[in-house]
Image (cartoon, rainbow, N blue to C red; front, side, top):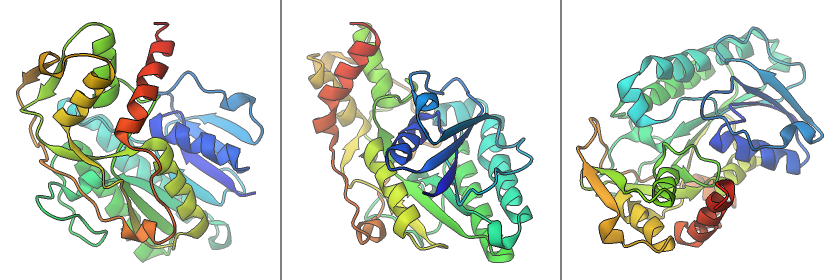
Length: 310
């Protein structure tokens, strides 16, 4: 089976991908620098076909032998953190991608892996009507999405100039167990379990598409199997809720009064009003999301209770 180099495989979405790839018989080399957001509840080390390299992607000096694909999940991703301290985002999201691309370019053309860049729908910026297509202009609104857009442009530039084989995957807002509790749903569940009110930026009306991480990584693995090199693919659920609506769904799932569960705080700078992407290209390959937010929330809450021993 194929040997994959996965970066950021201890992070939220990356860990779902590593788990799926190992279950499907792929061999996985996981490169992760083990940041604050790395998961500590994984059993990968005990599973066949798994290798681990603790390293920052900016500091890698060579790629393992026999790798057919690089799947780059390694990134700083929390928008609030990017506004407060953007240097880490440039380091990981831009310089890290540059280093990986150069390591691929340095290999003999017959031994160069396909580079799969995991991007985000946030690179399109606010979409007031309709849905963004892969060919639409990038219009990032904050340091996080700007660094991800810059990485996409590097990938495209290295593909066009140096002939690297690449695929870019732009996924919408992911959720699932294992997400670090700086993100909305995980943070909301933790706050409620602690008896606290959740904080909501502005009036909570900005809208997002919500995609289960397990469905997202199924799409990414499908693109390794059937995707066209050189293409960009949006991956989205078409399940759209405002931030407040999603948080109220958590409150309802936990038996809290949604009208007494939130404190509203000033909006953050660069707030996008709505994301929506057209994912007809990936759906044409046979992919469909299998879970909805309402379907998953009771399981999510129960997993959190077990984690905290409640």
